[in-house]
Length: 189
Image 1 (cartoon, one colour):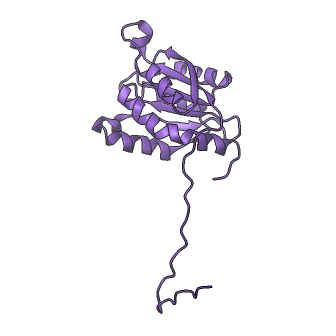
Image 2 (tube, one colour; image 1 turned 180 degrees about the vertical axis):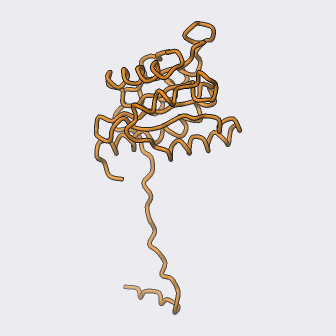
């Protein structure tokens, strides 16, 4: 048996190494919903490109999205679409669009009433990551949170309506989905 290394008087003992918990994949795929919030996509004036991209990128994290729902901008349309997705069994709901500062950008206002808990650290992380890509990232007011703190809770994420904003948001959120859902199920920190 080896002798412990003597400490110098007044020296701080070396701390044992700490193993950090890291992201891991979902044990099985979960149901997801993508909601594109855009007056122009609803009217047919613009093609929805961010919603299908979000569905594909979430699929890479085992969040299965069968189709993308398109709704007009507005507090009530967003709230109703999120509540419908939750009622239909989605565990992850991602909205795209309506997070800016124009008069019709009301996605956060429609999302806030359905959230029991905001995850402001993830919101900040999304913006910080986005700032490495474009200075416009700081204009997004997107929220992230859960509908309840129990096993039926749903992760809700607001992404900007651009393809870049969707990519940046899912780059941050995708790896965190398993841990958030585990926490809702009563899992350890």
